[in-house]
Image (cartoon, rainbow, N blue to C red; front, side, top):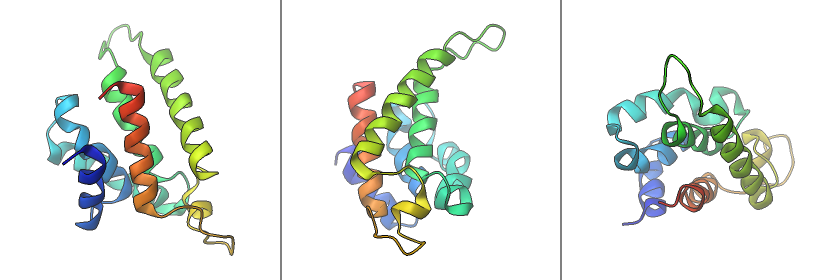
Amino acid sequence: MNKKEQAVELHGKGYNCAQSVVCPFCEDLGIDVQTAFKLSEAFGGGMGTFSTCGAVSGMAMVIGMKQSDGNLDKPKSKSQSYKLMKEATNKFLEMNQSTICREIKGMDGGEVLRSCNGCIEDAVAILEELLDN
């Protein structure tokens, strides 16, 4: 099963959008699934407020974990992480017209731009492309 399929399957099991994006990358990131699940829990549902899409938040977490040098005394990797996140966000915007959960779901009377599963698949595909996974 590839990462996109795994992500959609996790969402079907009740994982939120952020968890569904982050958890398939655990092995690549060297973290256990339960830790990733817990760390990403409050990012679903647009951080519980239907703001930034959980799939987008999940992309940020994966990019940070993959790119960070982990240097607590003199961190030097932030600019590369920010650059990749900007690129990921722009790709997600091109595909979905928004990064705001409320807008994507059409909650204010607008059209539904994309399903949650679609956003999850897009986020995973973007990560695989940008991180060469």
